[in-house]
Image (cartoon, rainbow, N blue to C red; front, top):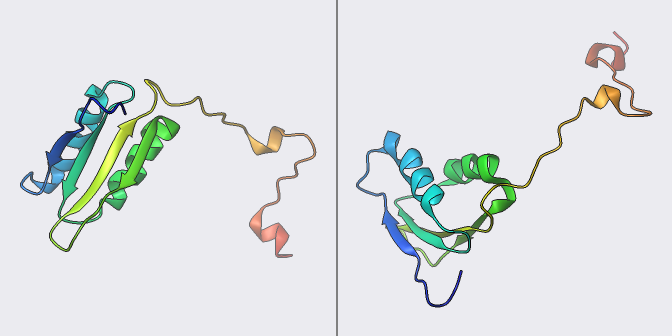
Amino acid sequence: MTDETAPEIIDVRTVPKPERHPFVMAAYQKLDVGSGLILINDHEPKNLKIEMEAEYAEALAWEPQASDDQEFRVLISKRAGTPLPRVLADVGELGGAEVVKVNEAKGS
């Protein structure tokens, strides 16, 4: 994030819970690369972090900020326009890999 651009502050404490994740995700998608937003929530948004990391991977930066009992703050920054590519592989096709069923491994 550049020094001249202050992050947008989004307070979701008054947003109905089912609408919070889509609201934050939409705000993140609108960010320019290198910019960020400060999310204020009434709890640590662990599930949102998991969801955003799954969707945006290394394009996302998640930095908890000074918080207290009334609010949790996190700086969410956009590092890249798209997440890094992910490589998916069938481990059974990897050279030297052996697929063993759980029951076979136990001797059943």
